[in-house]
Image (cartoon, rainbow, N blue to C red; front, side, top):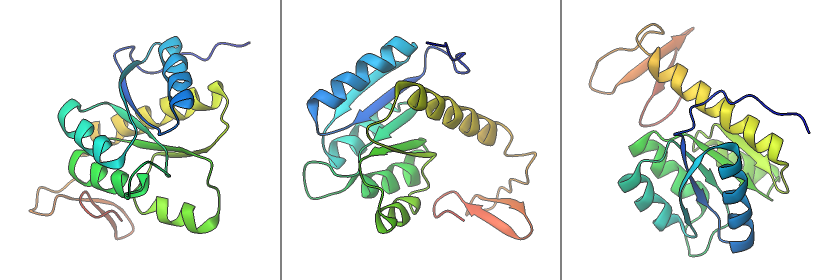
Length: 165
């Protein structure tokens, strides 16, 4: 098996939001093997939002169908709006409606279960690189300090950090 270079620091903490215990434990093991810290495993949207607010993980792996009434998509929207933590959906849902709904939460990735460890690691490293680059370089890509905190990207497209494009 080929090794994938670690583009991110080993201190990267990841929250797993998964209601299937066996899958969550398997993911935790894989993430630890990659050198990531697992900040926790949550099984509901409410627990995920609370964990994100109090623990501030660097990235979240989010299932869509969770225990309770609230979906992973709704949790992701709230987490992104208030905490700006990158989210990768890891789910078995691949229908057009679910994907369209998920895109409203501005995820950094969308993986279909079952997912190979290599695919997961590449998605995490890509998301972390993109997130660090974007927020590190926000001034150079036209960040304005107005009340809305809007980032102008190009061709009259703007990204409102609270609402999206």
